[in-house]
Length: 287
Image 1: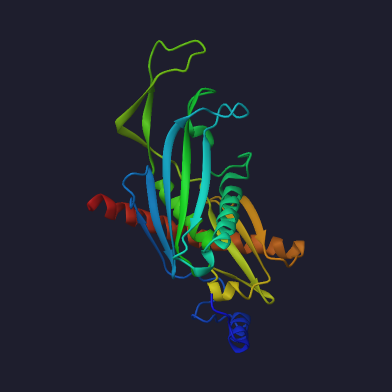
Image 2 (image 1 turned 90 degrees about the vertical axis):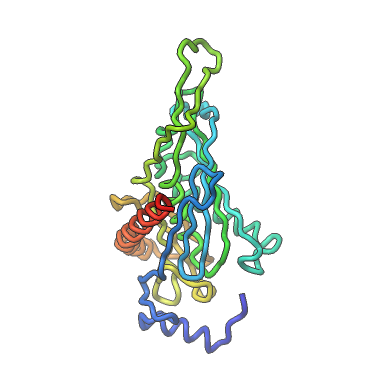
């Protein structure tokens, strides 16, 4: 991104301090959000989300696998993000690789409760076909197409939309399969189970610029931040995960206030996202 002049930096910070940002928004207002679903026919589910000039795509691929011996009653989910060099010149080479890893880890933490899957917002037990033997593995891929800030929240929204678009084939276990041998499973080509996304949270990133924090920061606003806290919140207002970036430390009381603000903001975001997903699904059925 191009360097900002001192005047531009002061303009951004001054506007945020007065609750009037460069693009006319208040501190806790999102840019327009649009959702398209079913954009990748080969995937089990897919979605495109635009937040202002930030555009991301998420796809879900479901494949049969074996449960982990440590969690025989749960399926597995892997999240990987790719930052296209065409989205931002700084994504060329190592810059893009490092950001891809950072976003993948943050999404894993916010949506799956970390590597262990404890406190997972995605119901992993619903992915088991036969406990200890067969489960569905979900491979979730995110792609940053165009970058103008707030990538984590946009990717979280796209994953939620892609999961709501995901149909998992009905798996019927062949009768008579017993013993220690791997059971035979018939995968239906016609019957699909819709993935339950009611518990999947949204991610709200609060970016601290000066003494104030804002939601849905643009790339210019992010360049002036001291730190950012991303909080994933579900429909019940429960915190599913939290991650921080930026070098500046934060007082615990500020983090508690950020969590309170994130809970409040998440309600509006969930309602907006749900209505956009429903509209996108309706458009997809008509076309």
